[in-house]
Amino acid sequence: MSANARPGRSVEVVERSSATLEDVARAAGVSLATASRALNGSTRRVRPEYVERVEAAARELRYMPNVQAQAVARGATTVVSLVVGEITDPYFAQIAAGAMRAADRAGLVLVITSTAGDAEREASVLRSVAGLRPRAVVLAVSRGTSSAAGAGVELLRGGGASVVALVSDDGAASSTAVIPLVVGNRAGAAALAEALVDEGHRDFAVLAGEPDVVTARARATGFVDGLAGRGIRLADDRVVAGVFTRDGGHAAMTQLLEAGVRPGCVFAVNDVSAVGALAAIRDHGLEPGRDIAVAGFDDVGTLADVVPALSTVHLPLETIGEFAVQAALGEDVPAVVAGEVVLRASTRLA
Image 1 (tube, helix red, strand yellow):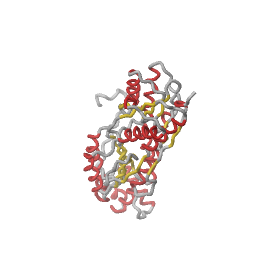
Image 2: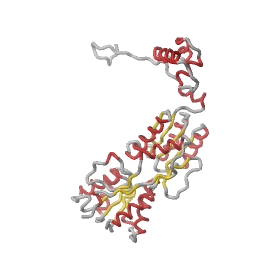
Image 3: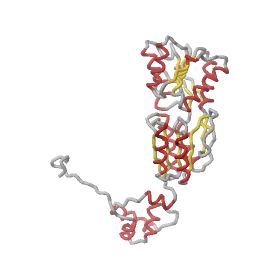
Image 4: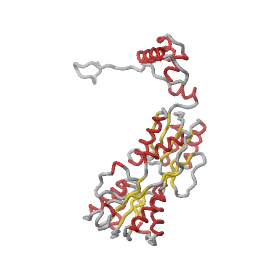
């Protein structure tokens, strides 16, 4: 008995099976080709009784197919890879949910990998993904595809994978090696700024996130441009950089308030940063939505119960994930996904 086993209880150790496809075929009484077609979903018809015999033999022998060997034989696996910036961010989680639905419909398996927001890690992640021989890859990394990752993209394409990247509408050229799916970050932020001015707000600040995050930069720039279009110039000290997280939003809002700046309305470049700003405003004895209005961007579903209800730009994040996988599989999808301004209690003037 194992030293870790409890007295009076049996411990079953399941060993990895060494059975081969040839063993399965022999046990089922069929040819190797028939066993392969029965287990691998071949388009060539296999008689139902043979499928049942092969599947029963595979279960009895605990046969596990060699996915890597299949990849070599087919040229690609049934894998679709999604590379995200930070899997704990609800923005990426919703994109992943949509991508998974699209992969399921296509009979493929979605493998999710995170760069943990580290641009230097991106290149090594892409090399690892290439080793899976995926059929398609979706890059949703916020910082954009780094030059160091370019070799990884070429490696993926050389292995037969099509590569789709979510890119922002900030005018920056995307790599010609990827299929772009444009997200309306800049246009959505500009529309939000215009809507807030039209609602009567005049005094603004921006919690701009990290300057090297493409998404954050596009949204901050779009918001400032939107204000300018309504005749409002934002002073440099009203744009505060920070980490693209809840704590980053809290720190940036705290920085403003402790510098004696109390804007009438604050725009945070994503919803989780806006939640941090709401908390910082409360920490300073003020009431968000009444003393200082707050708006975000994304409209992530997990924040639906934030109080006060958050004004934001709604992005159909799950749809974006679906479109990205569909585009990677060669299906026709819209080239640009736009955002929609949603005004709620957090920016409502009394």
